[in-house]
Length: 233
Image (tube, rainbow, N blue to C red; front, top):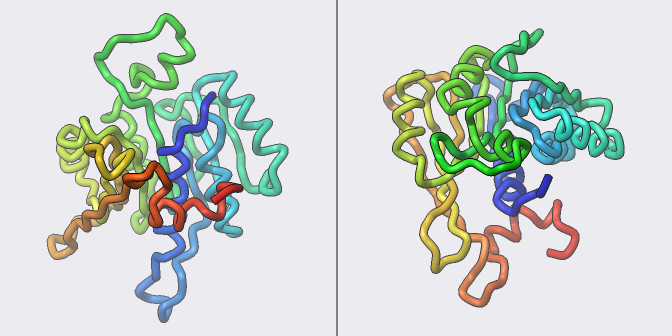
């Protein structure tokens, strides 16, 4: 499976967000994330990025596709964080998780009711017949701790749909990052941070980022997030 730039950016962004969360009852101390779930882990990229930057995180990384799960297991086994990542080859809708999670992350299949490939593996990776967006939010709401947080990577064209579904599930969005491929492009991805809280006074923050500048160089914001993961930044 390919590792995309937007998935790398998403992983770096969510790790940065987690490491900047402060628990209000801990005298300014960083909120620690222990039990984590990565839904649709694919190659294991997000789980590995999270483990790299949070040495207290124990991560269940679930993947329905057998070959992808095997690749994730190989990637985890060759990493320094193999003791803290558990790859599960199963359907997240049907799997009985032993615990609830402080953190749930997902880069889910993007497309519903669209033209499908002749390759069934590509369909599983890119189309959500096996896990619709509504089903994904059901899994998140069921398995998130009361004070937990979640992160989603979605295509921008599904922005209105995801906002409606989040409201229907009574999931609060605390921050949205709109992503452009370059400063000359329109938005093509949205990164969502949310929780179970529904406090009316807590407004959603909106930000944006571009991968490339006008000279086809990585932007300073992109460099800042990815410099500890990319070898040549």
